[in-house]
Length: 379
Ligand SMILES: *Cc1c(COP(=O)(O)O)cnc(C)c1O
Image (cartoon, rainbow, N blue to C red; front, side):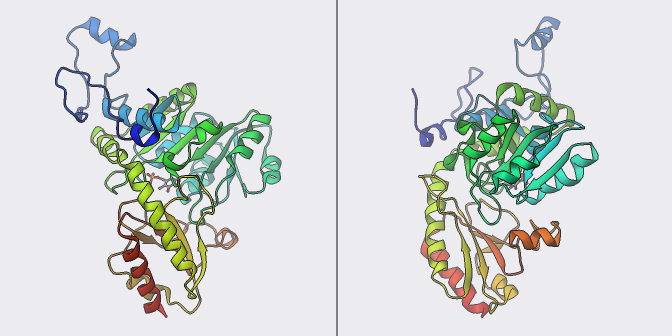
């Protein structure tokens, strides 16, 4: 039966594979799997049994990859040790030395560095352009371009990518598209269903949701994900069974969390908009009919002392990540965007008054009160 997203997300568990029918998936905390005969061992290589050694495959990591693929409407998925390793595996499955990538210039800092520095050393060149300007995207495409890379909702200014346009450009030129859907999560956006070839997540964020697991997931076309899985195995970027299990547990409440977090974010954005000490509020006008996400970025007025603001936030902690059930703040200039060249920081609007807020599941009025009080204290 075809069920809604909110139902699917709760029922992501693996089918029971043994005679003990536990309600939740057991943790296969094992480095390898046993065989009782050479025939059985040979069976693995013939595709009759799925598991041999946990780096090459494990039921818990497969559960995560398959669950996220199902939520994205994609046929295949692979879970990896981190969001960044999922990004690496995805890129390496479609680009090799001599190939060229066109990427959005307002990417997550770690991805920017991966493309600009690390992959460059291996002969994969990247041109960064503002993806809001499709003429510039088209102009940046070269004969050897194999990949267009962007994010559904960008960090920290929450620009919403025009996925339809991107897919159109890519199809015209027969180029693969890959999109980081971390900020929106499949609850809000399902880029694969819009024609994107590969969708990647830092499961460390909304998919896991409880700030207790670092993991990544890549989903998409079966043949590309198959290649990406080989990269994960060969580069040793596999996710451990317990981490995968935690991510799957977190995933079950994705719809509930996102619903509440997005509602809270909307109320906070509204309140901060009305605050005269806040120079700018960045909150997307439209991400999906289910909401606009749970991140609000603000630029405080020059009259606010930024250090005092950060130390007056009470129970809202300064944390260089996002998407947990607790409301937290981060300082892009000091953390996520620290490594960007100053010209690029300027160009995309990162300055010393910019604060990124990751909204949690607390009471909206408590969250608003805490921020209003910290702004007051910073004056
Ligand atoms: C955190 C993040 C990543 C990297 O994920 P890790 O799990 O830290 O490796 C990639 N993209 C976005 C948008 C992120 O927020």
